[in-house]
Every structure is written in structure tokens, then in C-alpha cells.
Image (cartoon, rainbow, N blue to C red; front, side, top):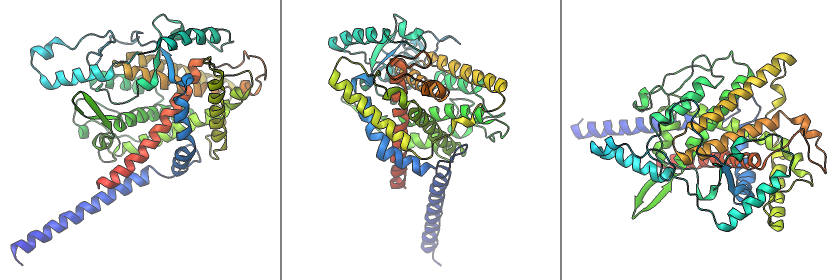
Length: 448
């Protein structure tokens, strides 16, 4: 056999091996991000189809309505746990400027990263005079309601309305030690985690050496497993948004945004994450089910004639409520809901204690969002955390919701405007994440 033939044969062998490897990787992804989810009887394919054809188009329209477009948030609250040490300056957000040592050392790469984070992480606070006047009317209307609880954040002079459509959640350049510290604090200090967890050890280390492997403890009760999965699912959803809306290039001052396959693989590929990526994505689906269940449970609250989504435009308000009720009808039609009654179902004293611990852990996580060093990231982190907190409040208030009077406010259960806006926008983010995941699956198949 000639040398050329041997080389050709070797090349064909390598190519064949590569095809087998790629096929194997694809089968691993399909095997690990399909099938029935743990702790519930719902399969992923059913969620995909339900979300794509029923939920996603409607929730996207709802988020464009004035009632759900504006979110009041305080982005100036100090971090209660450690001195703030953001990645670098965030433009127009009263954060320390880019470190002088970067300029003095002529560290071009770090300085460029910092300046990019300045620009991408800044909040667009543009609001029309008409909108500002409307917000005063909105607040007056809300003040007349019998709120379930007072949120200090809403009453703070530093709280401001933000146009969510002008501030989409996407890649901002916020990364490194500061970003890692936030998530590490959530997992290490505030989560009912397994005895040993699969977590980042050093955010600056190479990808493959950055994690250690663990097995999920079977000793955790359902409530603690659920809590862990909710936080992991939220983390996965946020990472998916960043991968799907990544800064691909910037020419003539105009950025180009789109899906970044390399970044997606770094965060979710079975090999890159040592098998952990698919589990994170499954937790995203689990979180989707939890919030979907909450929407189906809270429908009676909004179906009452006394509840309207007030913006001052009667026609638009009626259309918005009709669209919202239509979404609720879809959520109630889903046949494989998570059964929240299986939680906190033990002896009354133990269940009450565990439920309170559950609530306090989650409240602590919401406070950690004030430690996020990028304003746009902080905005969406606070919104999605409040949305999930509102979903949990709904799930554990079923009796109060069932007793709601038709034509008068109730002291037993009440939702503020902020909770309503956060609840629907947070679920909209999950719906978008699952839609983005479908797009990445297609892109990965084409790239192979």
C-alpha cells in the first residue's frame, strides 16, 4: 500500500471518528435534555410544543403593553453583604469609573472590556413626559388599593420607572470575579444545596478545570430539591438570554446582536460542563413549570370584575386584560402541571417551619441582587427574582385565592402592580429562554 493511500485511509478514519464523536455528542444532548422531568410527571417535548404554539406568541404581545412595559425599581440600593466591586464602570449609573491602573498599565484588552461593559450595562432611562405624568396617576390609583404588603423599594425616592423594551436583557460584558461572587453566594449561602455541589471554583480559570463533579444528594427532601432547582433554573435562563443576545460585532458604532454558539456550548455542552449543562437546562424547564402552575392558580384573582390593569387608557386596558385572561386560560389547559400540594405536606409544625425557612432563604437571595455590579443585569435580576417570589406567594396562597370576593378588595390575598408586572415578565423571560433553546438546537445541528 502506497504512503498516499495510507494517509488517505488515516484521514478517512479520523473523519469517521469525528462524525461518530459528533453523533455521540448530539445523542448525549438529546438524551439528557428530553424525557420526563424529575419530581413531576411532565415531559420536555410537551413543554416545548405548548410554549411554542400557545404561550410564547401571546406573552410576547403582553410584554409590549404599557401596563407590563414599565417596571419601577431601585438600582441604587447598596449591597448589604459586601463592599461593591463591580466589574468596572457602568455608564451613567453612579459607579466608580474604570480603574486608572488599566490605563496606566496600557492594558488594552482589559480596558476595552471595561469600556464595553460601561456602554452595554448602562440603563436607558429615556421616558416621555407623557409617560412620567401617567406614572403619577398610576401610583395614585394603586394607593387606593388594599395591598397585601408594602414594598419599601417602591416607596423609595431612588426608585424609578424603567422601560423594559428599551433595556432588553442581553450580553453586557459583566463577568469575572464580581459576577461569580454573586452566584457563588446564592448557591453557597442561600440554597438548599446537595452535600457537595457542582459549582464554579475560580471564574478566571480555564473552562475545563473550573468545576468539580458531584452527585445530587438523594437525602434532600422535595422542598429543598425544588428550591435548588428553581435557583439553578433561573441561572440557566439568564445565561441563555446572554447567549441568545450576544454582541457579535460592532461596526460604525452600530452593534450587531445574535446567538453565540460558542458561548452556549461553554455554558451548557455536556463535555464542556462535564455533564452538568443538560441538568441546568432541565432545571430551566422545571422553573417554567412552577411559574406556569402559579399563573393557572392566580387566574381567579384577575377574572374578577374589580381587577383592571389601569394605565388611564380604558380601551387599551380592556384589551390588555382580555389578552392576559386568554393566557391564563391556556395555562389552565396544560395537562401536566406540577403538584405543589406535595410540598410542605408533613406534620403541621415541621411543614410551617420548613416553609418559613424556604421563604427567608428566597428573600435573602433577592437581597443579593443588589450586589450585582451591572445596572442592566441588576434590573433583570431583581425583576426575575421578584417574579419568582410572587409565583411562590401564589402557590402557597391557594385557600386565600379561593375565598376572594368578586366585587371588593381582599385582605387575605393582594398583588401590587410591581408583583404583577414582575410575575408576567419573569414568565415571559422563561418562555423566551425555552424558545431560544430550540433555536440553539437547530443551529448546533446545522453547524455539525
